[in-house]
Length: 143
Ligand SMILES: [Zn+2]
Ligand SMILES: [Zn+2]
Ligand SMILES: [Zn+2]
Image (cartoon, rainbow, N blue to C red; front, side, top):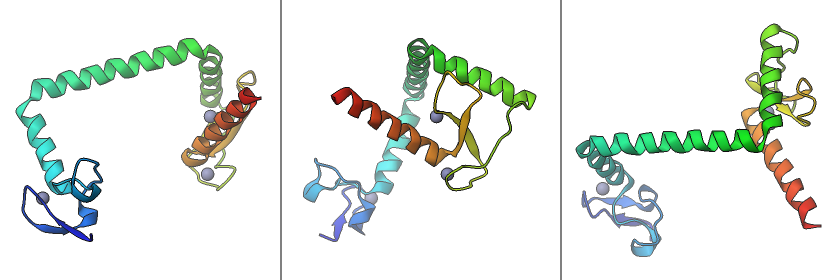
């Protein structure tokens, strides 16, 4: 362990220069990260129409996911819309993250029935709040 020879550029590189892979020897890919990146670039350069098709498909998928979310959680969308409008009009004021004080924060709804009642959280703490809420939901569902 420690280092590995790249199949493509034939250079001996430290093991960190290889992605983990269950297909490669010793649990690491046979080509280094650099070469993997380069070959992906080459691959897509040779197939521009496929790349475009793939991007379009991803876009459709994202739109479909958004639409699904919208249908499943209309109250969340409504709350967010009302909240955004209130923010624009200055009815609610932006605050730094309540946990760490980060200036770049987003309004988090603890209760979607109270659209203007939000907790201000930065990206990270916002994500943590949602993860926690999901976990609690799961725990409640178990009992
Ligand atoms: Zn290489
Ligand atoms: Zn924070
Ligand atoms: Zn939130």
